[in-house]
Length: 278
Length: 235
Image (tube, rainbow over all chains, first blue to last red; front, side):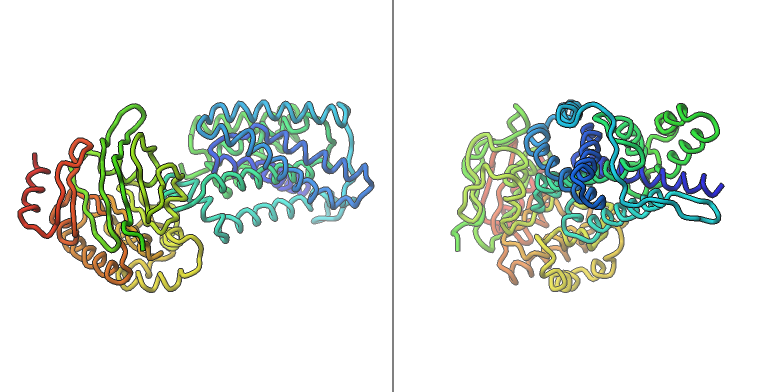
């Protein structure tokens, strides 16, 4: 029972970390970044590069964040920014970009599955149950991501301006806020978060050029039911992620993989605002 | 000091292919209160939106403090010591009163001093800092809008139909505050209104906009002018 609860909490933490970057980009830029899976893959391969260079495994995380931010800056400037007035085209462009990122990674690193070193190994006893230390670390990591985003949004001028742009961009511009700058910084942060999430999840599985795709689908559904709210995203990750763990454990891992998508679709059918206030 | 705060010359503007403003010219001097009057749909708000860069000028030129801003993006125009209060969607409803006020400044410097000053005008604003703006009453929201505009001691205030829906006592209070602020800082005020008595109670000069063109203008102190403008707005 303890292991099951911990599986639910750690799965929710991973899902939250993966979806948070997508959420803030949707909130500020009003576009779904389908290149999110690509940025996540970049983070995974940042961890691989750190492993191959024989560096300290903890360096995978700052390396992933830097790689994500740099890539996000380039993409925002040259792909997203010219398409702000054409949101549908921007979404399609991010979709294509995700494919391009996957192909470029294939060219550089090959198609095969590879493994990265983990900074934390071993297990510990939690209420008498032996549990992976790394999975427990992911709970702290997700909490740190949530705390960092909340602090950025609520305790900084940039966060205040970002919230203003989310709520009413014309009014924000009328008050002198450079919404273009806010979008740029937000996209960079979102890409950095996606890449960090990629580096966080790779020690649990492996890296391959398409590793971001299944995560993108689940993150997309979680964001859809979260109404651009971090708190709602946390609830969605815990609820739907928990359901995924339960279905995978007691019914079938294959069906478990579909749980978030199916439940999110049902939830949106019943309550269009999902876990948000509407 | 620049001879004019706002100088609009031969301005035409509109939405897409539709022309709403035609060859409008007007200027506002430092410390002057200028009232632009007209019925709904005559182009008053369109003029303000064009000055702020929300709408592109199809023809003509706009100068602020002597600088041509016709092609500047909105946020750069707004940073030129301008306070703009649009007619609709004027507050961030889900942000607190304090956050809404902070957004009236370019950064947080001077916030405490500014807050103390606007709280003298509107004590309720200072007492409701943690309340969400959307939960304030209509009159309180107007106080917050004006407070946000005054916070940064702008050189030009552009106020779009602020009196709409306000009680006469509140309109009177608002008039006193705007006149006091003009006296304190020397700010120019560009008031867009349908409420002729309110506009004429503080304006130095006026213009009437009719189907996108200036149909009448003059000195606001003239009582005959007030009656004439009132008639024009009734027709």
